[in-house]
Picture 1 (cartoon, rainbow, N blue to C red):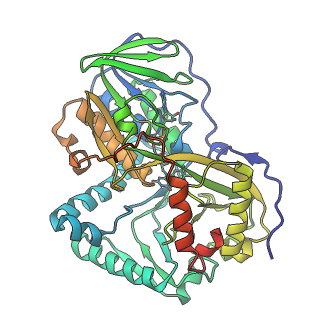
Picture 2 (spheres, rainbow, N blue to C red):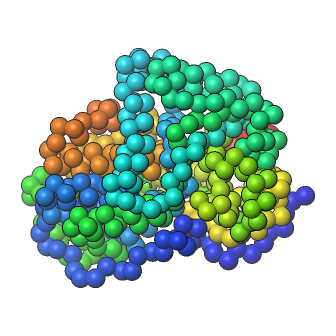
Picture 3 (cartoon, rainbow, N blue to C red):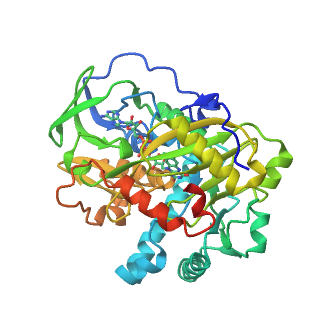
Length: 438
Ligand SMILES: Cc1cc2nc3c(=O)[nH]c(=O)nc-3n(C[C@H](O)[C@H](O)[C@H](O)COP(=O)(O)OP(=O)(O)OC[C@H]3O[C@@H](n4cnc5c(N)ncnc54)[C@H](O)[C@@H]3O)c2cc1C
């Protein structure tokens, strides 16, 4: 039975903001002169800023909206080791040494989150109890297990296969044919992680300025001018950490990023026995569909958080929320009558080669294009950016060396994303789990 749409008391306020409310507006005026201006107050910008400030430089973080307004406080909190490309594909295409480098740094990004949490003493409910990867079809399952076995052989990444019958021990659904648990991964509370990064930035002496969009950049390294709505800032270096919200500061970067919307809902609070039926394994889970469905318990186990319809146009957020609620009830029937509490959206960025990138263009440092692994990759590459600005050798990364491509005539407006999304949804609709998005 299709659940009746219920009222949603908290539209467009990410569930995470309940425990980590938007910080009070910053006071004072932006500085007129500083060593480094960081643009964007998400995971990337803050990790870069912390590193730079601890290296002895003066840093200001400029944020167009409230601090942490972007995807960093809107995501699902998965701390994953996942590219859109499998290890096998990367090995076939670029060779084993390169695949080992890429996946080695991907693993390092997960460790970078763990390290940041430990060093800054951030209470963000990180739980590395494994990531469940349910599969929509037998072909997906065979491919996944083949690839995980290769990753285990070459990189030592541990996993456990999950048979069709065992799926019920992880998720209360019959829509999947099996899957795998990847060990050492898990989830955190992104609102609290971001709040911890903000505290760390303050302790490091970073100046934080919110509600002040950067309008344009001019000059060159050691003599930049950053024009904002509240005056100009002279600086030696600039770091761009705007990922899915990147627009117009560096047209070269706009042409290489593909922004898209992602959507999530949180259910109303559920009783422990309801949660135990819905997500008995208590893990973060993301399925094998092209347009993946992802589900997890909130870190306190009180609600189910669910996402999908990635890449759909923003349209009416409440409609998206009700659609996701219906999808959740179809995927996990025991939740069919569960009400909706919150729906929200955020902007991500992909790249044409589906890999994250960092680098320096015209003297401007950037890291972006995380393709849905921005929690670990933003932490890792943000930290690398900071080290690069300080001139440290350990800033080297395979993601800085990759050619960063665009397509002819692409100007940063991704008109093709809704078409691609519809195409994927049609492909996915051939499987029981993929069909629920139709
Ligand atoms: C619904 C959803 C679910 C996701 N789930 C996951 C997940 O489970 N795991 C994972 O690893 N990743 C996930 N992601 C992706 C991840 O959240 C992002 O990749 C990551 O947060 C990017 O961090 P960032 O700091 O680079 O950018 P953001 O956090 O997006 O911050 C960019 C900031 O730049 C600001 N800005 C833009 N232009 C200007 C300007 N001109 N002047 C000043 N400020 C400006 C914006 O206002 C924004 O606050 C998800 C994303 C979404 C939306």
